[in-house]
Length: 116
Image 1 (cartoon, rainbow, N blue to C red):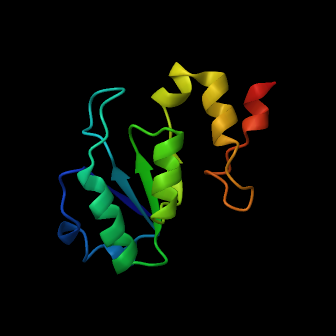
Image 2 (cartoon, rainbow, N blue to C red):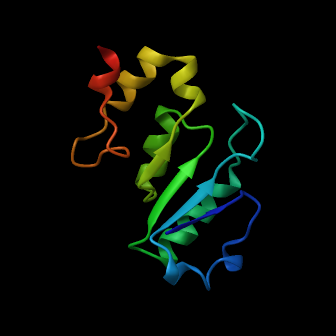
């Protein structure tokens, strides 16, 4: 089971629920608008969550691109939901996402399937 939080939701609102979940999805954009801008305050939230829960699966959704995924991966994010980046630049984005090491896949993403 997982829980999702909006960018403005403080982690303190869900700390009592964390022991019941396997995954926390942090929305990195304000919901409602496709292609919305990245909310930079979510970086602090990701760091805080990783510190509080070193083994928790952390997922992010919103305004993902290759550089941002690379940076957030270093902060301990495990799963990335990617939408507009792929739709706007299908071949380029899938090739770039395929650059990530096989031992740390992005949601089991297999770019070869999409490049055929």
